[in-house]
Length: 400
Image (cartoon, rainbow, N blue to C red; front, top):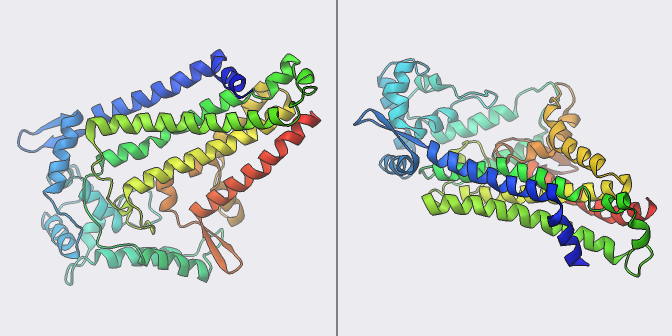
């Protein structure tokens, strides 16, 4: 029975094409990321590309500092201010930003208001260095100011403020410094990984509906295991397929990056991507967590689609529902008045797929005297939906 269900998944031509294209997409993305890496060589005044660019950038970063200490940041900002340039200008880019590399943007972002979508480079010119740059003090002040702001859709409760400030204060400082190129590539695997979720939706949309469409359901339900074991076999095979297909795709992409570039930067703190992130995670841990969320999304979607497939009797209708769940919420705007809607909107798959953004978003769900973080609520909601839907599939299939 199990073998037959696996066979049906892999023998369907549409499924096979979609699965192959998913892995091809990951291969193309990894190839483009590696070949598209660039490093500007000041000595020759030329750009270096590919693997050599990553290696050269690693050497450049290692020559800067090991940790982002207050002393180092103060020295760095002092050097920047000595130029007396508009940091948004082309001249500043050529003389300051390009030679310094990523560290300029990391430092500038720390002094940029959390509401701004773009990094305020000129903020570095406005720092009073009389008593130092106060890099980490500025980080906490920036977070506190954000939490104390007035928002049209509702303000943070006192217990939420305390929760986030405590988490931010528990972050290990000073931050370790290093090259982020390879970890960026691993983190970006979540994008083609999301396409694999579409592939999974295509493959499982016909698991139950195909039995209705072929008329085999009437025969199957009269067999010894048709009303029990067959249903759970279909569910089990579909979930295992989703986890396996997604895991293999991500591991292939990560493995290819590791073979060509290694995994330098795995131990870097996630605060190098955004200093306000209040979680003590390394880049490698964040990547693993991102892939775990991706798997959680895929399993939940599979169970929802199996329920739809069992009840609607149509593979096409089930597939449309799946694609709608994945795509449509991307067009849902955030409300300027309803905090409740915003908190619901945050939980759709297309938003939680990007863990990097989630970690830096001070979204919380107060429940009684407790505060549940965005990441925790995502896990709770998706597991709860999965359990409820899974327990409904049998009843829906037999009723249909």
